[in-house]
Each structure stands twice: as C-alpha cells, then as structure tokens.
View 1 (spheres, one colour):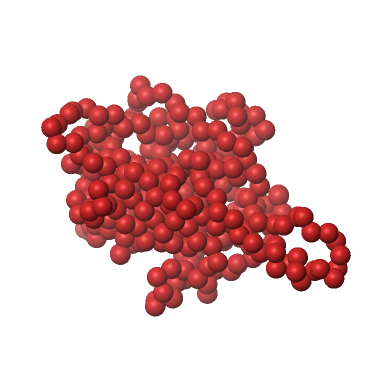
View 2: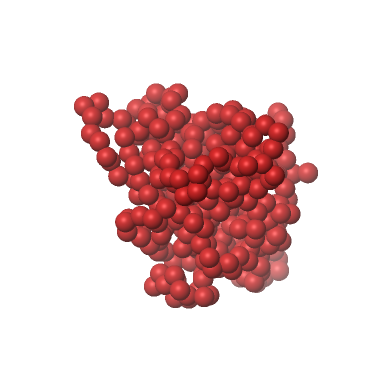
Length: 328
C-alpha cells in the first residue's frame, strides 16, 4: 500500500547487503585508497577525482558490487527512532520481498582536509588549528547492475468488486528501478576491523532518481556487510533550476559528499578519553541530519576547491512503500 503523499518522506529505507570488489576479475585485497595516484576535492554536488601522476603501470580501478535486501522504516521523521533491522543469524540477508543488486567503479580519491571536532570528553583528533592533511577515500558510483525492487500499483483495472482479489494480487507487482546518480564515499572497500579508528566503518552517499534527491548514512560490518539508511529530501517545483538559495529546498540536497561526511563525522564519532579510541555511534543514521526536517542553512565546513559544481537533475515522483514490517 502506497503512503500518503504528505508523509512518505517520513520513511527511512534501510539497505543491507554484502559487497564484493574485484579488479579485472581478481578479488581486491589492497583496500587502502592511499596507494592511488588520484586526488580530488569536494564541492557543490560531488567529489571530482583528478589524476596527478602517470605511471607506466596504470592502476585499474576496482569494480564494487553490493547485493542484498531493503526494508522501509515507516512513520519515522525522527531518525533516532530507526533501529537496525533484525536479521536471522542463519540467513544472508534481512527478510524482505525487496532486493537490490547495484555496482559501479570505485575511484580512489585523496582529499585535503582539516581536523574535524568530535564529541566526547577526550581531546579528539590531535591536530593543530586549521592544520591540513590528506585523507584517502573511494568514491563509488553505484548506478550499474540490476537495480532495486519497488512495489508498483496497477491502476488499469476497473472498479468491479468481483475482481477485488485478482486486482489486489496484481497490485503487489514489483518493478526494477535504477538510480540516476548514487555516489558512495568510503575509506575502505572491505571490512578493516580497525577498532581504534571506527570512522573507517562510516559510509555516506547522495544521489538522485525519479523519486527525487536522497542522502544515505550507514556503516560497514564484519563480512563486508554494508547497512545504510536512505532519506529522500524535500524539493521545490523549481528544483530543475538548481537554485541553492531556494528556501523551499532541503539544504542537504546541495551538500557535497565531503560536506555530508564531515557533518556525519561530527555527530557520530566520539573520542574515548581513556584510550583515545574513535568510536562510531551505532547506528550512525540516528543523527539530526537524517531527520526528515533539517533546515539548518549553515553548511558543514569543507576545504576550499576550484572544482565546478555538477548539478544533478531528473524528474521526481512520489516514493511508494509497502506495509512490510521490519523483522522483530
């Protein structure tokens, strides 16, 4: 059953599945983007990697695939109320009628960053004021693959009550959708197990499809499992003009990946005073920036860049969900 148009953005969509990465068909063992010869900066809509050196032996970029299921957490405008969906220990994926298989090329990217304050009573990341360093990431554009399932309503039936059961059955038909853009920022392509710096587990993404723009926040887990929550954003009728000053648009839609990453990092990472461990709050989507209403106009701080903004377009429709419940 489709949600009312006034509250469908209250739903958080939790995607959970296993990733695999290969280069020319060979599994990727080196998960550190620091071996890359690419650099980039983030501004406006995305991060644009640019090659800075050329070597005789060119690095082939890994192909990353992500396969699993998704479930809707309905009536959840407050993201702090969205718990992690339960999965049967003997099953690979969360029980759901809705599956996804997406893939794309993982581009190693080096970003010039400054220290980001973290919560907690510890001293945080020990960097001097405005001290700049390089941070290594992968940006993966997950727009390839089979796509993801969504229920579609069949409006072609007449209103004959005798056909009610048959119509109800047809209305449960699913359709495959693709994201027009879906850029994912991660530090590691495979689970690192680095318990001292759990910021390595963090995943952020942003994108666009025919239902509208979205942001996503999640984390990596043992076994190369990604669990990520997607929130669709409010847009105005003039969105196609890409006017960042339109007060009817959700400000998050104009953030770059790095702006989103730093905003999530500030709220989700705490420093343990006794050990200096950087600990990730679980689940990381339980943040104010993942609420349905986020009207803070001040963007998170990010390094200056000369990159051009790349505006995402696309028509928008109302997202539909089913009454599928999260496993208890």
